[in-house]
Image 1 (tube, helix red, strand yellow):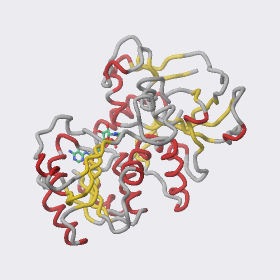
Image 2 (image 1 turned 120 degrees about the vertical axis):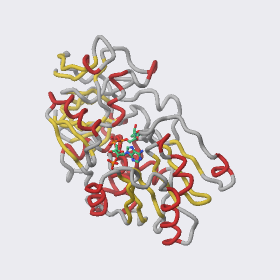
Image 3 (image 1 turned 90 degrees about the vertical axis):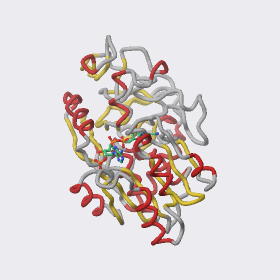
Length: 344
Ligand SMILES: NC(=O)c1ccc[n+]([C@@H]2O[C@H](COP(=O)([O-])OP(=O)(O)OC[C@H]3O[C@@H](n4cnc5c(N)ncnc54)[C@H](OP(=O)(O)O)[C@@H]3O)[C@@H](O)[C@H]2O)c1
């Protein structure tokens, strides 16, 4: 089968199409004939060994997101798990995290990092490390769900407990941010979105953002965001921040969030070191909640909420399998709005 793998050496030049033997579903396994994959920011770090010594030795098949059709069911797969030939299933990013709180074991097998990923014609998994996807979604839309979708869902719902009338701040217009915007609106929250682009600001409004600020024109956006939220709710800031910028943004987020509010620490697009006014966290009892994707239960809950309103992930573009490098360059450019996908 055809795969895209890093081979021989950790760098982008050694990320290449290669041939591997066609896998066969063993005991307890299902085989997915992959239809589409989706890129995440992390996939730009993987070829450079960005996740360090925990990563699988080379060769490593890249990408963590994808969807495929069940075309083999191995012996011993229990009928009660609901797997049938020809259904579309997504493998979960963390193979083996079925539900509950994360622990080291549940976070130990991440696709496209600790173990081979989704940029392949076939993928073997087990039914409790994968889940069926709603029929109304296209292959590219379904491929976006396991990482960006589940991360936003876990931040706002499982960990965040966002309620109608809350104010949620989302940063940028990438994959996680747009899922978070859509979920926040689904939950009845108001959304303030940040972006660096005028054209993207219009699209964020079309998607439901109640206010949009340009973080390049207003780099000190913490106080204006706080004032906006306070004007709406009477509380002293936003209830929830979906923190994606990290080093560049966390200090502003702490100015924007209300006392007792939550900052979901998800991304470090602007660096992973930061000089912080910790007093703002302590004296205002702010909750800093680290989020690392989520479980199969999160995925199932998210899909059922999406299906009720036929919510569609925002797909920016779909590249052919062989054009993975071009797809990555597009993601790296920051020109995208939503998810960059790959057909398999
Ligand atoms: N913890 C987890 O489980 C988890 C899961 C998924 C992703 N992540 C992390 O979350 C981050 C976002 O991932 P993604 O895949 O959604 O990325 P992405 O699709 O590549 O999103 C990039 C977008 O973020 C915006 N951005 C960049 N720097 C910013 C800043 N300083 N302030 C505000 N917005 C900024 C830009 O939007 P504009 O063009 O609109 O300015 C940019 O286009 C990454 O750090 C990724 O590693 C973490």
